[in-house]
Length: 218
Image 1 (spheres, rainbow, N blue to C red):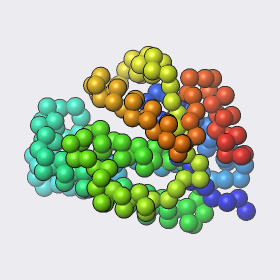
Image 2 (tube, rainbow, N blue to C red):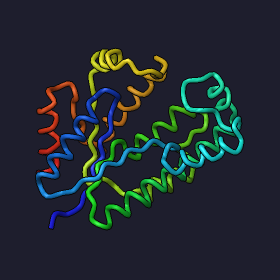
Image 3 (tube, one colour):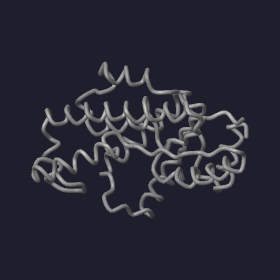
Image 4 (cartoon, rainbow, N blue to C red):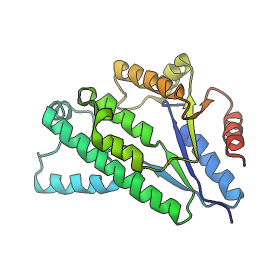
């Protein structure tokens, strides 16, 4: 029987994470596994999305609508709302990773996490730097309860390639340049922690896939 695994794939935008996950899914299926993909950003689970939709239905102006809007930025400039939102996001992350992900793994599922805990915590830090969420007791508890991946990959790019690919991607609501740089530097810091298998995404797709497969011992 093939043992179930938890595999996380993190990294900078445009490093090819989605492509590599698709290739990895196909490879694992060929080798007897039935992988399940899990994508998550803190505060944006199906459960919280449904709750927000219900609140908007009951109180239309209580929560700003999704998208890049001045009203949304104004709403989230409120420190009390920031703390409530971050608290809800942490509990949501606990539900997704410590409960749902762990449960799937315990019943024999191999899960590929498109982003994982470090990405989630990084998102909170970048969005609400003044809250210092890394020092919250709830975050420390969260880290202790979430399962460790069997393999954690981090896809990186040279800075100039990163910027070039972002331009080519042409997202409708891109990060501001300052946020973009902070995010890139944050992932550079993660790459130096020794907690990831760091892979250069600025290589042919097949070469990147081979590096991942070899690291898995497949």
